[in-house]
Image 1 (cartoon, one colour):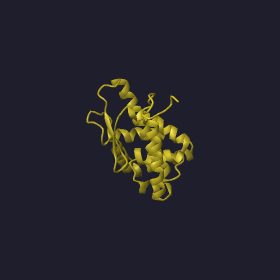
Image 2 (cartoon, rainbow, N blue to C red):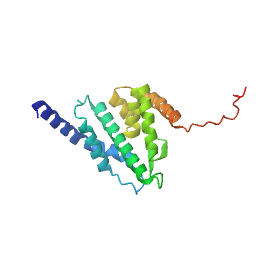
Image 3 (tube, rainbow, N blue to C red):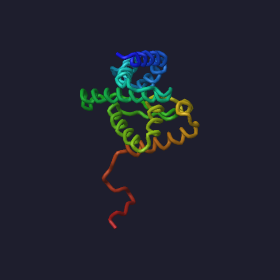
Image 4 (spheres, helix red, strand yellow):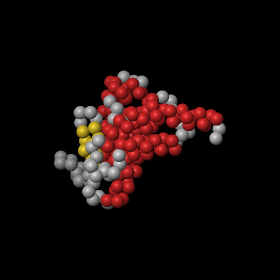
Length: 189
């Protein structure tokens, strides 16, 4: 192992130790509304995310926003993997409920719907990477608009506007697609 790799690894380990309390808070935010039957604990979520982050250890952290964005993304991936395993085991049986909150509004979703949210976030990232990052920090990271603004170096008003845009995009992406014409549609001519 080279000296530079060893030094970077030691620096990464120190950063993880310093951020562990905040990572536990983020993980707790993710798991707060899961049913008691869920088998994923806060500590497990943090540790699984840590392993994902360590697996991509070629990354040089460019600051708190970069690190916590990556940590939120890693937790999102762990939850998606958990949802996939859960779906495979249950095949739609007694689905687990998760609460995803934007502060004033709490949205109850089924755990398997995390997969649809993950796909919608990928589509959002293809359109606007910054909006995806804001959603990951707010939705998966549990950060307030003020905290996200500080992490990204922009005003809270900018985060508020972008949060609204991102939620509208995701709502459109996640709404059920119907093939029946709407009332009042005059598509027959």
